[in-house]
Length: 258
Image 1: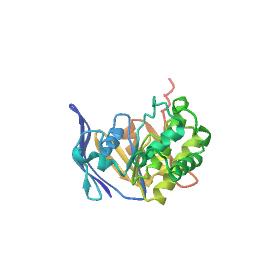
Image 2 (image 1 turned 90 degrees about the vertical axis):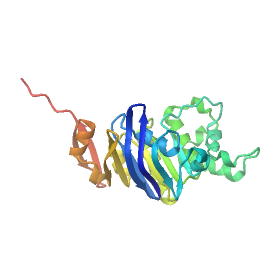
Image 3 (image 1 turned 60 degrees about the horizontal axis):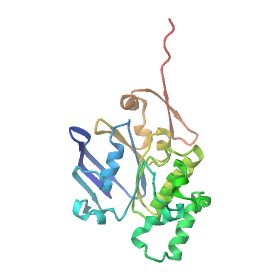
């Protein structure tokens, strides 16, 4: 279990998260939602240990501290929103860096095979020997996701993992997230802007606004018109897909004719 206890994040006088209490269980996908500036990315950075905070972040009895940050990060794979890199490396080499702790002068056949298999599963084998700098934003996102999975994490932190992907690749990647989370009993916490995708692929969603958790629970319970209208300041229509998950449709009211 990953547990946040009274987690507070401040940028000077600005409080982006205030006394956040939350628990995350293995085998589940948790998606953090909220308007721009709600503190979604900051929450992931704090969990990873990249951002200062007050309060406590603990995992399996171990508490995050600055002095033990390397040990804290060992079971965590963090995929930030910005996947840009200036490294002169191939896509395959970038993926293999996910296991930097296991690297030496010689890359084992097992590690190489695992990296190649991940590229194949994400349908990007053809990019293996291309420079990572030459890839599109969406292709880099897929490569960085493969790198994250190669770490064999216990906690997977994904900040807008599908923001640069087309619809087919969004579904492919999120299907992989769900598969790996369940198969390997990971704790997956991701940030998404697409509420309908969050509803389809999350076990729980967390809605942030004004530094506080406004609602948390199963998507059907949280993604309701009234609370979404309050958080996003837009009129919302909730539809239902043939799979039974909410489909969130924002709309602008028509102006009355004069």
